Image (cartoon, rainbow, N blue to C red; front, side, top):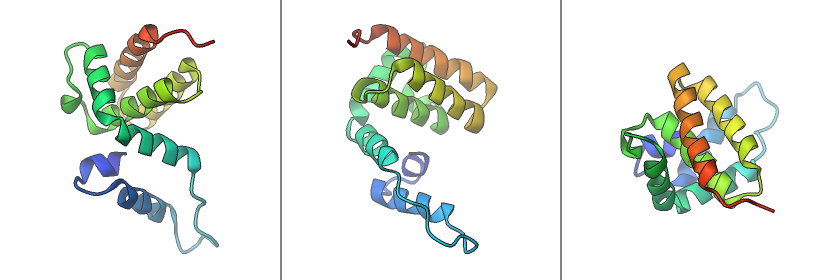
Length: 128
């Protein structure tokens, strides 16, 4: 998502190929396997991007998605898509998003991502 977002008009397919190419090194005996779940999340997120960005704009106080850091907005987009369109329980989605923010963003981002996703979670209809 980061590569795709930063290198527009790079297609999502090109971004995914570049990502997998970056994982491969000549020291490996075989190329990394394609991750089906990653593909579902990224394709779904891009397909629903307008809806997700509008939703995130409503739940992020005083921040528009366009002004967020590239890392934070893509963590939020993926997490929002997963909460809305996958079977993953929202607390699990939020925990994973916070781990991504800790690893790839800043300490301030962890709190920001948590706040936005928690606000979104509170607005979701209860799943049976």
